[in-house]
Length: 143
Image (cartoon, rainbow, N blue to C red):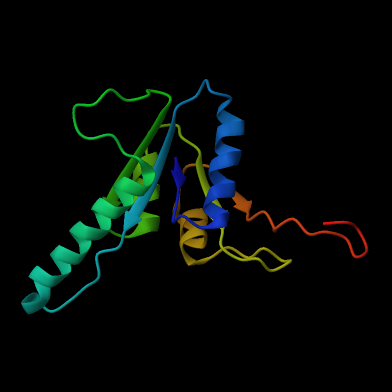
């Protein structure tokens, strides 16, 4: 189970998951749209914004419409809720590995809030992948 927020760290996590799976093990790529708490008078506004974010994320991930043939080795889904809780729940009881990107570009590679909560709250093993730093050209080398 790979979490994505479309960041470079999430892209790195997906690349590592594909390497680990070797095209043999199934991968589920999940994007989670948060559902913010709001006063009930804002329920319609929050629901409309959440629905729009889900549609946009599905389009970005290329999620097949219901009924379309799917690749059994690679699936993408968009869910709503708390990202850490959704990732943990998706892996629960599956014998799955959760792969998350570390959201920091710092040398210490500290996990972001979601990655930290997944690492500390999951019974499944978690592989935390640092973002790949952008390629740099050494000083004096031709670009």
